[in-house]
Image (cartoon, rainbow, N blue to C red):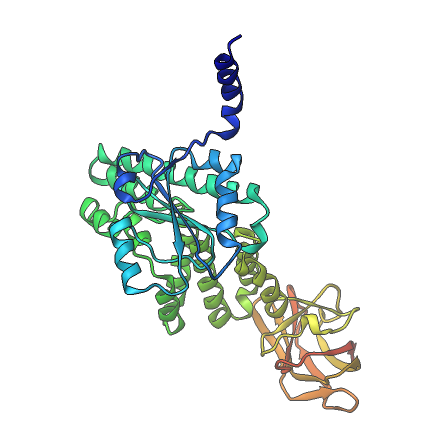
Length: 406
């Protein structure tokens, strides 16, 4: 075998280890000559104010998994100075044209654009992931898959018309993980003026403004129904559904009262199940504990079931208040840094209040007015016992409750 043949064989053997699937370019003009459906990836890293940033970016771009995830995207490197001068800003305009170069929150980052230069998403690489190319590759692959899915829907929309085209554009806008196409609301309004698809409402949805409006609404039931409808809309993102769920929870908490307590609890469960690892999902656990947790007669009260406001706490499990008669309910402090402050006791049959004793009482190292008397005129079919406390933020209190029939 000739020496040249040996070198060729060696080169072919090493090719899979060294070749990169993605392309490279120095500027946007060069990228235009190479761009494919996989678009452009601008890799941004700190120039001199983060000594690990550039090294991390280079390691990521050399990693086979990241390389594979980028597909045939055109990669342009961009080192970001701590402060961009006027001259550097002008140079970036020449080099990157009309690309949106607003900076990500974390460096290094891979910013993806489609073949028409529309910014799709930012893939930030926090310090914890700098030694984990597999995690970065997974992020890149997820974003690239989302971009391809969106591009496919938009391509289908090009050959459609009317409401069908509106639906495809709406589906493209709802693809999670990438920014929605430009002028979505305007296109939907033109294609589907009567909003038969329901997509225009989704595209123009401002749930923050809706929450403010709902705070003072007179027809809260109508707003609640709308939020439930939005939560069932498959075109909403998970976060949007969580926002709608939060508004529904707020409406039930402000206006629902005891009669809607079970519904409030179900909404909190839904908020958690939509995305258990999200901030809203995790907060639902604390909200349920504070707003709808029940108190067991055997275990007594503890900080975990005491709300910081006047939300009634239901007595769960077995209790003697079922038959007609007069009952005394006494709260006795056992430990903790705070005395229990009580506002009253309420007895209900189903959703109807049957009897109550509302007066300020307390039990701690000293007790005063801590016994409550209620007169039940007839046997209860669906007995509920509610306690109303007045603890505020300090709730480190434990104790027992006794119920006796006179």
